[in-house]
Amino acid sequence: MVLASGNSSSHPVSFILLGIPGLESFQFWIAFPFCATYAVAVVGNITLLHVIRIDHTLHEPMYLFLAMLAITDLVLSSSTQPKMLAIFWFHAHEIQYHACLIQVFFIHAFSSMESGVLMAMALDCYVAICFPLRHSSILTPLVLIKLGTIVMLRGLLWVSPFCFMVSRMPFCQHQAIPQSYCEHMAVLKLVCADTSISRGYGLFVAFSVAGFDMIVIGKSYVMILRAVLQLPSGEACLKAFSTCASHICVILALYIPALFSFLTYRFGHDVPRVVHILFANLYLLIPPMLNPIIYGVKTKQIGVRVIQGCCGNIP
Image 1: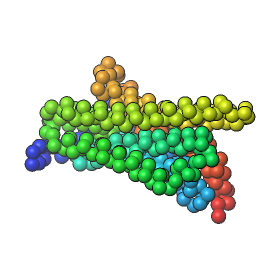
Image 2 (image 1 turned 180 degrees about the horizontal axis):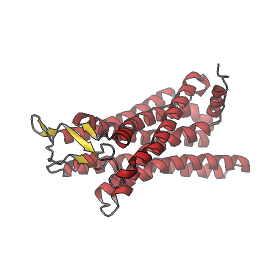
Image 3 (image 1 turned 180 degrees about the vertical axis):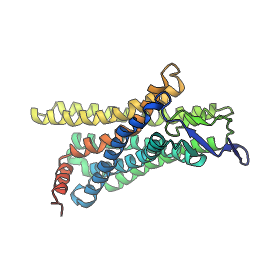
């Protein structure tokens, strides 16, 4: 493997992404459900963005957060799936060094943004249910802009040091990554130097982002459920429970595979590699597909507009 020299470190020209080690003979067929999932995610999120853009009645906090989530899902899934499909179908295992670092940045930055958007949506739901008369005065346009900016900047600023620290480290001769995309810890394992600082920073980012967001989300839904149980109408209570349950499923679909993958890299040495890599792929595949379905279609206004669009009735 040819190494390129820099000012203070040497890095490879490219890496080799192995895909899913242990399932090489099945990767061609595994790519079909992956491709179908990606197609649903792209079509669903683009449809969601289009409906929110053209319908001015949907320019409210909840739908603006949905638009942010759709953009995040499109970037997150598109940063990995095309290359993954190229590996599975065309054996295009090589990825350039800088392209790999860019992929690391996009995966972790937009995973952080997705977590932040889900937190913001939980807060919006909490305010809408617990303080319905003050919703518009609490979540003003200025507050929405500030919240969205904080979510975006947190993802960019927290994750940028990953790429900077890795780019300053020397790499070993072995350049094969046992993954279908470039993940921070997978790349870090190829470094021939002390990586304790970078590993420690990774733990800090993961627990400061996911930990904080999960605490806020959990507390928000506890307060929401408490308010829902006090509703006088049984039908309204059941409807609210259904909505909360679907939202919680989406949140768990992101956090469970993501945390499993993250912790397995550091502590789960006995976890079979195939299981680990499949979970690592799922958290980049399933949430982008589920989000437009659960958050979009289950939202009455968006569902109606989608049906009207399919029937050619959108003005």
